[in-house]
Length: 161
Image (tube, rainbow, N blue to C red; front, side, top):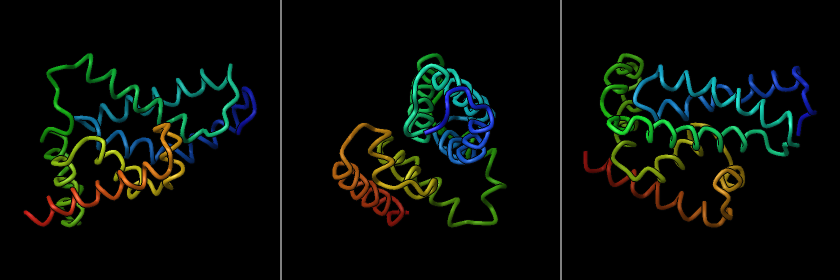
């Protein structure tokens, strides 16, 4: 929890969560530029919300805002396809040194969006099952089961390549 209108505390939250929010958006949006723009918007909306409401779980708040912004983004840009080759090809050089990471990134696009989201949050952002449950407003047990199914789906895709 952070203090009402405490800019220093909010700056620390920004530093703590910027990387995870940016990474999450990067895997959910068509271009890195879109991820950068929405990352800024997440923190602006988080600040606006926190100046009027007490926030217990800042990380959950930021990820909930990010999820809503992703929905708004695709609603406004219906012709865009999430993670459709553009971003992957443009960012390929980043992944070239780590071919396993590149293969997993490509494989993530072939599983259900819900599963992809769980894997990104749990494995790439190192979030606990309890934290993810808070974001999705589900029980930790439900998240564990879904995460297990997500791992199986990703393994099937990786094994078929």
